[in-house]
Length: 204
Image (cartoon, rainbow, N blue to C red):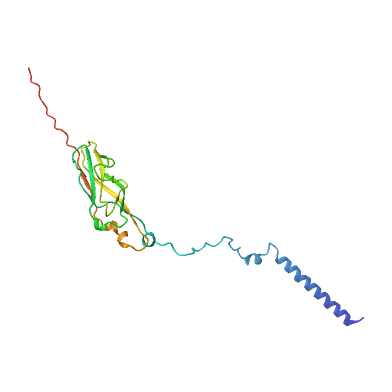
């Protein structure tokens, strides 16, 4: 019997068994029952797309660079009806601050009565153009509106709204026009009710 060959054979058998044991351990670690493997599993990354940052320059403010229409709630107008206290009246409205009129004028956007039901408003009367859609400018400072009393007994005031279109640029005088005008209004008077006399019939 050769002792050297027997020792080599035994050592080879030990190596084969050790390698097989390592392989079995690796296979068992990949199974679903391994707590250690589960504890080190990372959560999947979110597939949602990241929010896009705004690109390009910010839009300029309309009143600073691009101009635009500026509302004037109450224009600086004045005047009186040509026949106050009548049922049918003709009002001539005049612009009272000519130094504040811009080159492109101020367009009328509405007529307002307070209280609203005391009078009815119509179109042109007299020699001036109708105030509806009229543009006050350096060469046109008056407009007209026909007024009809409705017999409610309530006097009223007429105001005119408008707007100015400011050119592009930094024209502060145009943008600040609503704060520099002195609002005006026109007073309207209801017709006086005719006095009635009561007579007593003589007794027989």
